[in-house]
Length: 476
Image 1: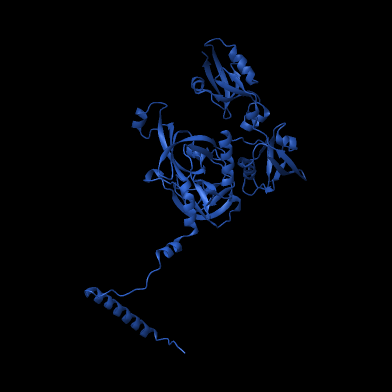
Image 2: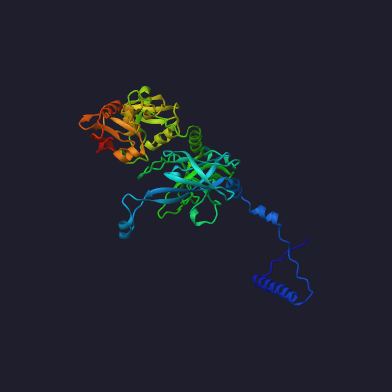
């Protein structure tokens, strides 16, 4: 029977040092003696085994998604702002300049449709897409939804690599995710995406709107995977290489990642993209009810339920029996803690969808069914004026939709660029009076304008952003 004896620690160290010295001496002697073969060492593991040990789920996920990620370069025109007295002196009044910005996207359909963020391509005059094979091709913005912050870009290419799509609804807090994109793409010499890894930090995050933000970032996926400027519109993938979100925003103090990144759920992005590809736009569901928002909450994070502040006559909520002062507690089984939860429920519903809403009035709780309709401005009768203006009569529904203060008037739905420049009128303005005549309908505006003599001056009063302004016009 073999036995092992433990030597004293001091003796063990001496023997180990002596053995190491003998080995080093032998190697040195062999190296100095011609014709002497080097000492044999244990053979390392094969390269295949080494590569296999380094291949993790993160590596596999990145390799699956990489061939579908594109870089997007956008040229847009923005007002020129001088940074010095010299600039202010030489810049012409009202001048503008071309600004270049960068973002990311990913292939949605093999025939050239690409998903990105709306804010990536906003006000784009020219779009260039860098494909995974290194070629640059022109892109066309098919449509965009500012509310969901999703846009679709089309390139003239076929047989593009479509990634696998997963579901954000099944994500677990703490599981690995991979963010791919082109941060600071203008500084890099190629369009290959940058890969960052992290975990799902939280799900169902609602971000309080701020500033001039047009998008509603609700039910977002939060991750600590590094997301930086240029990552916007890129994919967030799970460890299986399935896209579960669209990277869109970060919380930051200096412009870089601090581990607080957010992605739009892929289910929302795909629903919006499908509608844009099918019709070129997104039909927004209308419910005919307004609720108390952040301005009326002392602590919007913990308030239970949302209070109804107004109900549009003959709208979906009115037909379902909701009244001003009711408190909405749940919608389609989801608890409504505050107005952001209510906005999140509405954001992912389309025209004709239903909502089972639990509400409380006085001491009674009831469940009501709301069926959404089109926005009032979509269904409103349109009136053309001189082929330059498209108007709609202000109704209770339009007032609620556009947050108009005036009781009556004509809403400008669209105006040609030439007419806008000549008159100062803009889409979204509400014509409330012409000279001293109050305007009650769009038809009335057409009648007044049609009766004017050539070059007869008129003063048009409009509501714009809740304020009263006017414009003096002389029609040719």
